[in-house]
Amino acid sequence: MIGAHHTPAALRGRLVIALRWLAGLLVLGLLLHFLPLAPLRAALVRVPPRRFLVILIGYLFAHCIGVAKWRMVVNSAGAELDLATSAQCYAGGLFGTLFLPSIIGGDVVRLAVGLRRSPRPAAVLTGNVADRFIDVAAQAALVLAGLVLLPGSLPAQLQIPQRGILLFAGAGFFLLVAIAIVSQRRILGGRSFHFRRRLAHLSHALRAVSRRPHILIFGWMLGVCIQFSFLVLTALLAVSCGLLLPLRVWLFAWPLAKLAAVLPLTQGGIGVREAALVALLAPFGAPGPVVLAAGLVWEGVIIAGGLIAGAVAFFLRKSAAEVPAN
Image (cartoon, rainbow, N blue to C red):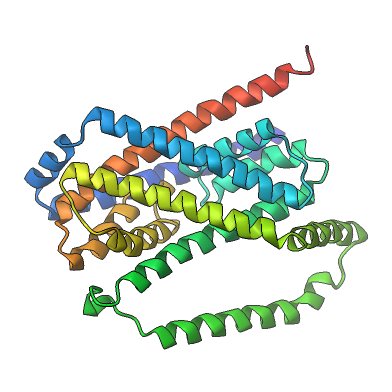
């Protein structure tokens, strides 16, 4: 009976993965249809294999820093995870982001390992959520830096009134606070003692994180450095493809393209990221085929990195399983 319950869910998961990969290929196919192929092919040929390998190594090194950041934030909530377990969680999450059906598939893998290994599972959950907020804040910092550095060269169609952005952000923040206050009693009302106990553990972990603002700030700084390194690596690939743009333009377009890839339309944002990057860089005079070529090569780096991360996670899990036997 257990297998009967799990088989349909597994089939649905595989179907979702297949559909999202097909959706990504469809988006790429549309880009290839509307963009000339000759400049795209010429731009791809310009990227030497050695450059691709160097970019891949840099990509993996940045994620090694990401392992340290994730462990630092999660342990600040009281998770008490060692480096090997943190690396397994992070690497498995990196693999799951590309090859699991859910948009939060990577977080599911991280939590599945961390919740089993940590003496305080609630701390793992709270720390992972805090780390996600840090990543979003790091992306927002890059976008803000791009807007600040592009006051004169930002195309008119992309200019947004700063007062409107501030008012919208402030209204959204106060709305979230109001919803949290109003829904607090409904969440707690009629719940069992077991549920309230778990909620208390989450609240304790949240207080533990909030008592260490220096760790959150340092984690945000590391997040900005990691995301900026990805941006620079993408720009270097674009240079190899023949695309020369000021770094401030990449600061504006690259984080927005990555945020667009978060939409659960394709697997790992494949296709959506490239389409957004082509659209965002077009007003700056960037040729669409060259931008797409750089995006495709960067997509190859992401996929290769995800496969390597999956192999690392598998090796660490196997090593952890053999420890008790010794």
